[in-house]
Image (cartoon, rainbow, N blue to C red; front, side, top):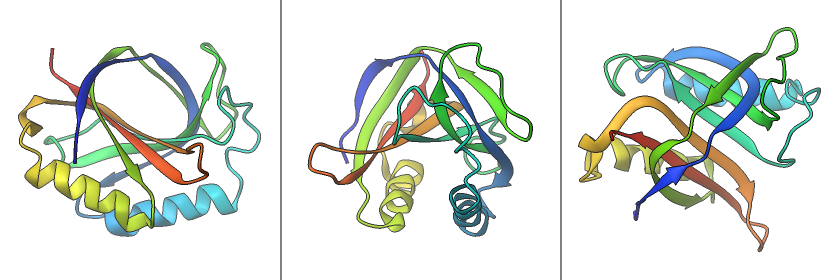
Length: 153
Protein backbone atom coordinates (compact mmCIF):
# COMPACT_ATOMS: atom_id res chain seq x y z
CA UNK A 1 0.00 0.00 0.00
CA UNK A 2 1.58 3.25 -1.15
CA UNK A 3 1.12 6.59 0.61
CA UNK A 4 2.17 10.07 -0.43
CA UNK A 5 2.39 13.07 1.87
CA UNK A 6 0.48 16.03 0.45
CA UNK A 7 -1.13 19.25 1.60
CA UNK A 8 -4.79 18.38 2.14
CA UNK A 9 -7.46 20.93 1.32
CA UNK A 10 -9.98 22.27 3.80
CA UNK A 11 -13.49 20.91 3.48
CA UNK A 12 -16.82 21.74 5.10
CA UNK A 13 -19.08 18.77 5.74
CA UNK A 14 -22.62 18.05 6.89
CA UNK A 15 -23.65 14.57 7.90
CA UNK A 16 -24.85 12.05 10.45
CA UNK A 17 -22.61 10.95 13.30
CA UNK A 18 -22.16 8.14 15.79
CA UNK A 19 -19.79 7.53 18.65
CA UNK A 20 -18.11 4.12 18.44
CA UNK A 21 -14.80 2.47 19.28
CA UNK A 22 -12.24 0.20 17.73
CA UNK A 23 -13.73 -2.71 19.70
CA UNK A 24 -17.28 -2.05 18.39
CA UNK A 25 -16.50 -0.82 14.88
CA UNK A 26 -17.12 -4.13 13.10
CA UNK A 27 -20.71 -4.04 14.36
CA UNK A 28 -21.40 -0.30 14.44
CA UNK A 29 -19.95 0.97 11.17
CA UNK A 30 -21.77 -1.36 8.72
CA UNK A 31 -25.03 -0.72 10.60
CA UNK A 32 -24.40 3.03 10.44
CA UNK A 33 -23.68 2.96 6.69
CA UNK A 34 -26.89 0.93 6.20
CA UNK A 35 -28.95 3.37 8.26
CA UNK A 36 -27.59 6.47 6.52
CA UNK A 37 -28.05 5.06 3.02
CA UNK A 38 -31.33 3.18 3.49
CA UNK A 39 -33.00 6.08 5.32
CA UNK A 40 -31.58 8.69 2.95
CA UNK A 41 -30.26 10.76 5.84
CA UNK A 42 -28.03 12.85 3.56
CA UNK A 43 -30.52 13.24 0.72
CA UNK A 44 -31.76 16.63 1.93
CA UNK A 45 -28.28 18.16 1.94
CA UNK A 46 -27.12 19.94 -1.22
CA UNK A 47 -23.60 18.63 -1.79
CA UNK A 48 -20.71 20.46 -3.43
CA UNK A 49 -19.56 17.07 -4.79
CA UNK A 50 -22.51 14.95 -5.93
CA UNK A 51 -21.95 11.19 -5.75
CA UNK A 52 -19.22 11.61 -3.11
CA UNK A 53 -19.53 10.49 0.51
CA UNK A 54 -17.03 11.29 3.23
CA UNK A 55 -16.43 8.91 6.11
CA UNK A 56 -14.77 10.96 8.85
CA UNK A 57 -13.05 9.71 11.98
CA UNK A 58 -12.49 12.41 14.61
CA UNK A 59 -12.40 13.04 18.36
CA UNK A 60 -10.19 9.97 18.75
CA UNK A 61 -9.28 8.71 22.22
CA UNK A 62 -6.17 6.61 22.83
CA UNK A 63 -5.01 7.00 19.23
CA UNK A 64 -6.90 4.37 17.18
CA UNK A 65 -7.64 1.98 20.03
CA UNK A 66 -10.32 3.93 21.92
CA UNK A 67 -13.60 5.68 21.23
CA UNK A 68 -14.08 8.09 18.34
CA UNK A 69 -16.77 9.96 16.45
CA UNK A 70 -17.58 8.84 12.93
CA UNK A 71 -19.49 10.94 10.42
CA UNK A 72 -20.93 9.97 7.09
CA UNK A 73 -21.18 13.29 5.33
CA UNK A 74 -21.23 15.29 2.13
CA UNK A 75 -19.20 18.38 1.30
CA UNK A 76 -21.03 21.70 1.46
CA UNK A 77 -20.12 25.36 0.99
CA UNK A 78 -18.45 26.82 4.12
CA UNK A 79 -20.96 28.12 6.65
CA UNK A 80 -23.79 25.82 5.53
CA UNK A 81 -25.94 25.04 8.57
CA UNK A 82 -26.68 21.42 9.38
CA UNK A 83 -30.34 20.41 9.14
CA UNK A 84 -31.96 19.09 12.29
CA UNK A 85 -30.56 15.70 13.29
CA UNK A 86 -27.29 16.22 11.39
CA UNK A 87 -23.99 17.85 12.34
CA UNK A 88 -21.48 20.07 10.57
CA UNK A 89 -17.71 19.78 10.64
CA UNK A 90 -15.01 21.98 9.11
CA UNK A 91 -11.82 20.06 8.40
CA UNK A 92 -8.90 22.49 8.07
CA UNK A 93 -6.21 22.26 5.42
CA UNK A 94 -3.33 20.23 6.79
CA UNK A 95 -0.64 17.75 5.81
CA UNK A 96 -1.99 14.27 5.14
CA UNK A 97 -0.72 10.88 4.08
CA UNK A 98 -2.88 9.84 1.13
CA UNK A 99 -3.61 6.46 -0.43
CA UNK A 100 -6.39 5.03 -2.58
CA UNK A 101 -8.26 1.75 -2.31
CA UNK A 102 -10.42 0.19 -5.02
CA UNK A 103 -13.55 -0.94 -3.21
CA UNK A 104 -14.01 -4.46 -4.50
CA UNK A 105 -15.98 -5.08 -1.29
CA UNK A 106 -16.35 -3.45 2.14
CA UNK A 107 -13.54 -5.76 3.25
CA UNK A 108 -11.15 -3.76 1.03
CA UNK A 109 -11.53 -0.77 3.37
CA UNK A 110 -11.18 -2.93 6.48
CA UNK A 111 -7.98 -4.44 5.05
CA UNK A 112 -6.58 -0.96 4.34
CA UNK A 113 -7.20 0.14 7.94
CA UNK A 114 -5.69 -3.07 9.30
CA UNK A 115 -2.58 -2.26 7.27
CA UNK A 116 -2.53 1.33 8.62
CA UNK A 117 -2.96 0.24 12.25
CA UNK A 118 -0.50 -2.65 12.28
CA UNK A 119 1.85 -2.71 9.29
CA UNK A 120 2.24 0.78 7.82
CA UNK A 121 5.86 1.68 8.66
CA UNK A 122 5.09 5.41 9.02
CA UNK A 123 2.16 5.11 11.45
CA UNK A 124 4.16 7.12 14.01
CA UNK A 125 3.48 10.15 11.76
CA UNK A 126 -0.27 10.07 12.47
CA UNK A 127 -1.75 13.04 14.33
CA UNK A 128 -4.91 11.16 15.44
CA UNK A 129 -7.10 14.24 14.99
CA UNK A 130 -9.23 13.77 11.88
CA UNK A 131 -8.91 11.12 9.18
CA UNK A 132 -11.05 10.91 6.05
CA UNK A 133 -12.22 8.36 3.54
CA UNK A 134 -13.56 9.97 0.37
CA UNK A 135 -15.79 7.50 -1.48
CA UNK A 136 -16.47 8.16 -5.18
CA UNK A 137 -16.33 6.54 -8.62
CA UNK A 138 -13.26 6.85 -10.85
CA UNK A 139 -13.32 7.44 -14.63
CA UNK A 140 -13.81 3.72 -15.24
CA UNK A 141 -16.80 3.59 -12.89
CA UNK A 142 -15.00 1.72 -10.10
CA UNK A 143 -15.79 2.62 -6.51
CA UNK A 144 -12.64 4.09 -4.98
CA UNK A 145 -11.92 5.33 -1.49
CA UNK A 146 -9.20 7.89 -0.99
CA UNK A 147 -7.89 7.66 2.58
CA UNK A 148 -6.39 10.83 4.06
CA UNK A 149 -4.60 10.43 7.38
CA UNK A 150 -3.82 13.61 9.28
CA UNK A 151 -0.12 13.66 10.09
CA UNK A 152 2.09 15.60 12.47
CA UNK A 153 3.84 18.73 11.23
